Amino acid sequence: MRQHDFEDFTPRRRRSRFDDEINPVRRGRLTEGERERLARLREDAYAEPEIPGGADRYSTWDSAEHGPRPHPVWVVTDLAAVDTELGVLKTGKEADVHLLRRGLPGGGTDCLLAAKRYRSSEHRQFHRDSGYLEGRRMRRSRETRAMAQRTSFGRNLIAEQWAAAEFAALSRLWTIGAPVPYPVQRDGTELLLEFVGDADGTAAPRLAQLRPGPDELRVLWFQTLGALDVLASDGLAHGDLSAYNILVRDGRIVLIDLPQVVDVVANPRGTEFLDRDVRNIAGWFAARGLQVETEETAAGLRERAGLT
Picture 1 (tube, rainbow, N blue to C red):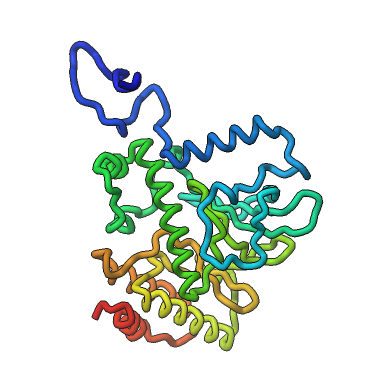
Picture 2 (picture 1 turned 45 degrees about the horizontal axis):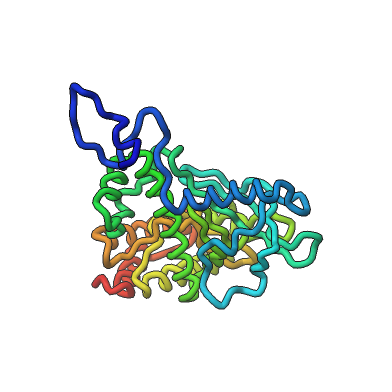
């Protein structure tokens, strides 16, 4: 028996206790993956207190889940590489995105990466997660219950599930040719992604930040429509598409923020999510003077997804 199984026992009130219940005197349990990841970080810190080149850590490539093969030539896979934090790119409700340089100590090969780190036990409620989690139930009822009740353990599970879901979605979308950042690796609740921006660390602007002229607006709309078509043809919808999660670099769009990507066939609300994506992004283009056929576009994508 484990010691904490008896921590809530009182002689006046007997009750059974599940492992995922909140203990009022300690923080919620981490998931197995997060516990192993943090243990590795602690071991590395004790084993090598000074990392070469003033970096923040050694590369975690060897212990992480990797992106689809073949890996792009710019991805640094050397186990001797180190990671250096360069600043915060974005803060959000569910995750923060940092700029990170991975390279060999002393110069040479390196690359810029976007490190997306999902919050876990500190985060109280994920944004509209109940609808997106349809069809993603955990196999064990204890874990499903913990997630539904938002216990500390459950929130850790949700964070790791979101990270795993986004990494899987990006890997799948990259493989079928969708305009998404290359997913380099996943280590627990941290994703390392292709940095979409310039070599000096300047991130590409979001679509919402641009003021495109008529011709550029039309080109960007057809690119966006093409991206939606690629997703729909594979039975998917972005799930939360807007001008704020589309980057534009060198005149080309890149879809980002994909933890909630929806399987429109398996999810009971799949059609609703697909239609909302179209309305949201078509409304942005229409508000800037481009004539778009919203309902016709949505109908065409539903047909591509096999929903009609």
